[in-house]
View 1 (cartoon, rainbow, N blue to C red):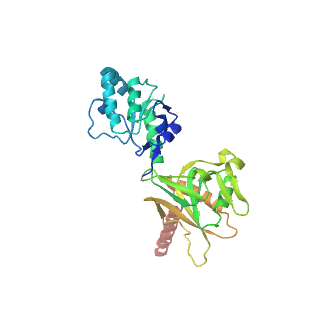
View 2 (view 1 turned 90 degrees about the horizontal axis):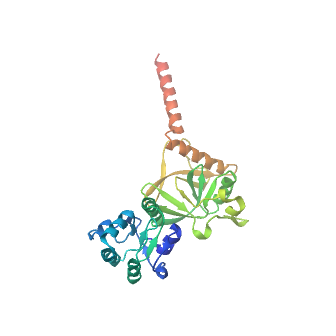
View 3 (view 1 turned 135 degrees about the horizontal axis):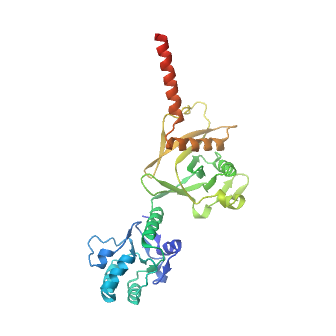
Length: 313
């Protein structure tokens, strides 16, 4: 299972570290959901989600104030005894010295944020869901074309990186070249990104490595993108029949999720960048309820029907 260290958690969300500064690299988060331990502060620990990040908001803090420091410290100590990843106090809630001492003793970090509880909880869940999602790496190029995440795949040397450069020149954005990390954030959604070490770099045979962000500007790159459509580039084979109507849907499966796929034959004279743009726009039209292939088929069927009726007359 993928994990996220408390150190990375703190850095990404801009949290204040109040205790256990030297252990942030060692303590790991393994679940994307959060828990607000209201019932635990009242002494109910059945089905306690102790693997989750524990968040204290205004409601929990008000309850602790009414219970008093001594009783609240007893409950906090019990919560920490389950070795929760961390406890986050929202809204700049003041943390009593007794809680900080318990934190150091139990080895459970106490963190703080000025964000309100609901928005912070939503952001934590969203971010952790991406970070902890199942992930695979594939050979390909991911670009954002008209807001659609287009994954270009194919054999090494087929020209994927060159297509990416042309698409950047046409105003689209590069997400990753050569290696794409795919994360499954839900049963419907796959997110793609570049490995940290190769982010924004493109390999062009005969030239070498170029930095797309430096050459073309920050508007030419993007860190993450949903994977909406796969275009499989392959050398033109005269004996192979390629789909000319688009009535049949093809899919490829990544991490159990099916992604629509087109097979694009490559031969001299074909402008692959324009083909990619057309595929992206056509895919967008289909999502909006219009299918050009189905419309043409309907017109042909109607025309054949009128011709048949005319012969009978």
